[in-house]
Length: 126
Image 1 (cartoon, rainbow, N blue to C red):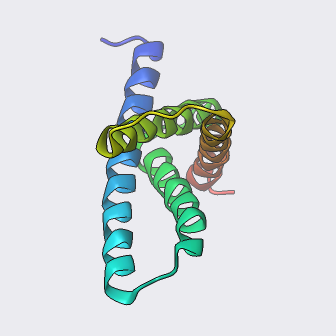
Image 2 (image 1 turned 120 degrees about the horizontal axis):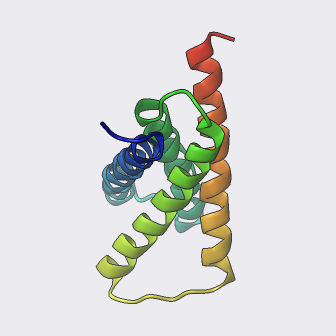
Image 3 (image 1 turned 45 degrees about the vertical axis):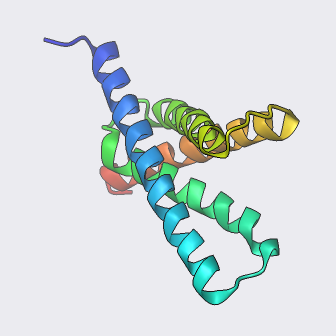
């Protein structure tokens, strides 16, 4: 039988994996839309942020169980931001780490914390 900490870590791990897969899928679909409809480059960064938040929300919503969901969500969001950063850095062939990256990680943690709290409220029926 797993301990409570082990179950929480498994939930967070599943949430990170789901968020990373969703992010990759949505970014690929968005890249297709950019190619097909000649979308300007000014919308890429905001849409990517929306994609990240949506993916983190999906990861938290479907993988976290009740109990400290805001904390688990924050860990899930932070982990998803870190994993997707390294995946896209590997695809680009270069890692450039700066304050923007740190802010992106913090944004992921914040989005995950809020998503976890929403998950808790939805599950409790409030």
